[in-house]
Length: 225
Length: 78
Length: 245
Image (cartoon, rainbow over all chains, first blue to last red; front, top):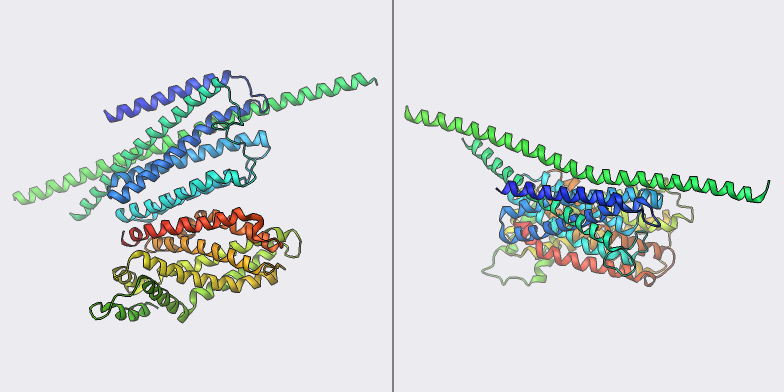
């Protein structure tokens, strides 16, 4: 039953994305940046998905430290992994946009740099998990690292205002940008689809983590014979 | 050479350049879409392979444990 | 060094006959113990200092120190050197307690995790600071940098930046002490964590080396100070979990 719901949600996300791609292809090129501007329809939802995953990871880590319930540890790994995937998607799409518009693949501007730093932090988190064998210690230490890493997120967000930056200011939630309403609607649907995808990925990985724990306990049982 | 001809030539070059720019622009839109999908596909594929590995290992371990259980029980009967 | 920890222990093991020392006294005992253990061998400090000077030498091949342009980023190089050398000291901080199970004894001692952490962090702070204070004039000579033009500003940046390195380094040193690949995991986790602090320190040091006062980039002083406060608070709150598990 649960699996079927997951598959249905994944399918819904896929349908929305397919419909959006059709709509996006029919949109006229943007006045100043031409077609490449349309990458934003995948760039921004990637960040929203990554942000949601990373926030989930923080909540799960805090809950693990409070309750010591391993389901929260599994949720933390699952959402961190999804977060890393979406952060990668955001950086790659951003880079592919920057090449025709700025003429460079990468710029050491504040927001890009701090995003890369966040990515490194969460990759470090995943590597730390690999280095620790004992489950309780692994879960505890990983949760602490996750909390420490998340403290970096606000610094990331505010630094764009402190450092002179090349990154275009956010088109949404700000008065300077202008975004036509039908474009906004497609963007909204795309963000929804990405969030759905993130949720499905996290749910599947969560089940896998629990299966992994079952596997580990079976292994211990096999050794004890 | 008359100056209007010069102007016409320049603008023709401009148009060609503009078309090339749009073409290139479009190309990168395509790369962007592909990249966005590729990352998701890679993630799904790693999930699927992990799922397979987990299922296989759990199945083999369970079979092994059952075997041992049976051997133990047989031993106790005797 | 392991034996020193044991040797210190009896003074605090007789709670019946003696009143428990105050919190700051407890912190002081930890600091004194760590400094004594380090200064008897000086292995981490000497290694860090030699390492710092070696990196300063290597950087002189990558960038020509005589060029004016180098002045624009020499301050940045300095903090890379400090971060690298600091890691050598910090790596030893908890690893030193592993032989003879000294770490378990410390955790079992009747002091809170926060006191232990604070003591260790302050001891590390003094050691890293000592290494930096020796490396700084060497840097000044090698790179023709007038770091002393705003002496007390420089000391302020040094104090705040070093505390950032030590507080993060100490908590992660406690975290990685028992795991495989300790020497690799510590820098892997601490350096990305330290980025805002290093960025701010580098910016301020570049200003100072070029004869400006820290007032010209006061925002980075605030970044550095808030980084210190934020992560010190987080470390004190979480250290008990890290140590006891």
